[in-house]
Amino acid sequence: MKIRFFEENEFLIKKAIGPGIYNIKIGLSGENNSDYESLYIGKSYSMITRCSTHLYELHKDPSYFGLSVCDMTNNNLELNIEIFESLDIDEELSSGEKDILLRERELEAIKKLKPLSQLETSDRLKKNRVDIVQSFLKALLKQNEK
Image (cartoon, rainbow, N blue to C red):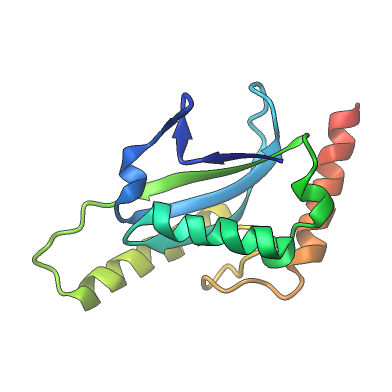
C-alpha cells in the first residue's frame, strides 16, 4: 500500500504541522484515480503529530481503521492522509474554547464525509468497521479488475 502523508506534488504540506481537521482516506493507487473513501476524520493541534501516531497504530494493527494485513501489502491501494481544514486559532481563546472549536469542525467534517470506520456522531470507531471497510475494498478492487 502506498501512503501519502500530507503530500502535495511530492512535498510535505507545512500547514499539517499546525492545528486543524484531517482526513484519512483510501482508494486505488495511481495518478488517475480520484475515487477515495474517507476512513477516519480527526482533529489535532498538530495534525502531523497525531497522524504519525495513527500510522504507528495502523502498522501494529491494521484493523484499527478496518484494514487487513493483506491490504497493507496491496500495491493497488493507497492511503492518503490530508488536511481537510487548516485552522488559524485565535491565541486569545481559552484552551477550552479552542477544544470546542476543533470539536465542532471535526463533527461537521464527519457528517459531511461519513467515514467508513467511524460513527457519524462522534470520533469513535465503529465496532463493525472491519466488515464495512473490507466490503468497500473488495468492491473497489473488483471494479479495478475490469
